[in-house]
Length: 369
Length: 248
Image (cartoon, rainbow over all chains, first blue to last red; front, side, top):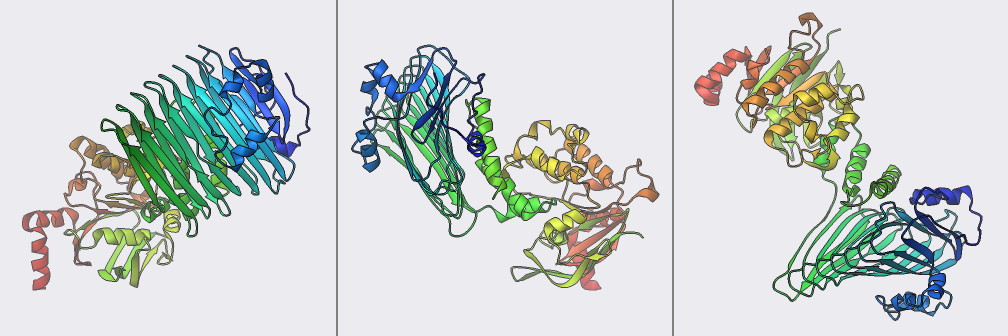
């Protein structure tokens, strides 16, 4: 399957590589690239996985319609409304079929190339019973993009005993405004993991995914690694609602500001007994002027639940810096070692390739600090 | 020309409080000296001031090393010049594994496998520096860093405190080698300078030190043979030293 061809410059390709998307690598499992509103590439050579533009999926299966707007309310805000009104929705449909366990990551990429572009996408992701799939969604824009909008609705369904990981490494140009709206449903014994990485200057990002763990012993985990240079406004919230016995939710965030603003309101809610969850939100402020608003909240009216959180915001300890300097390294080196270590989140259960992509992105952003 | 560490009339304040009052000492190359003194007399302050911690403000006096006045040099510049400390209680550095710092500071840009295995630290390489380390592990990790740095002036702040007998041997022998006090370095070839703070004196069983000082209230008033001074302290305590000063 191949979509309409759009020429990508070398710079475009490089930007895509930065976010972990490799082009035309047939050995890799599959990829989907949307440049502005054109589908550039849909490639798939994997048994058990279906990947197609959402428009095509809606024509092919009448049940796909039922999943659209099941978890996200179209009236939620102006962005969801805009996406809802779109008569020719762009976006992808990914389904991993029952029992198929796919270890190699599937890649999706939305790329803003032209200036003043509004990208509106609606994605549906389904991991059927007993399946496993890892998705890396690189988002990027050409360096010459002055302004642009990215609005993305993603609805994800993790069925019984399925495991889905969704990794997003953002690399938008300075002028881009990003408004993802996503929601996830986790079934019995299912596991969902999201890794959200944003390390570059971006005009404004505002996202707040909601995960509903509706099946017994289902698990959800939201990891975020955020670095805000000057002129960057990140709002990365998140919520896990535990609606079944034995449900588990974990939210881990590492935030660093070097002049930008980060808001990270995250919530764990338990609506039934025997649910448990943990949140860890740590922030570092590298210079005055940047702001971190970390607000972890726990919410339950049930006695028999276990919810806990740990949070901190502060500067790098002078004692640590001086200690490292006394071993012969400069103050800048010492700071960058510590910041790198702070952002270096080793994520359990994540395939090595994805961990590498995240490590790479962190490494690059720290270099330019 | 022979190198040396020369501390002259050193006065140091921490946040306005006078800690060191006119300290004088000289360590020629090839020699290791011992610094005794009661808790809080300023021993660690002296080490950290020589290393260059900005909190320790020199109000008077000079520190020179390798014929260079180093009062104004920063921590990393002094380390580059060849000064290294083994801290008594180093901070935990979250996110920076021991291995990473060893690779960065190693004088031959490599991990020194023999030292790592002698100190039994293989399993600590990937752990964050000092994070959750026991007393003994911290000391060993400090020693391992010094062995990688291989400085010319080695400052050890209570290398044996909190260390069990078995580890004491390993640490003592590593310190001996680092300070070129082992017989594999000919006496005339010895270049390293050392200054060791000790309470227990155990380190004296491993290293034949050349001289010892007693520091009381931020001043050094007494120096001599390390074994003799240690014996006197064991017999009369630092009270004996104070009484001795008062009678002077």
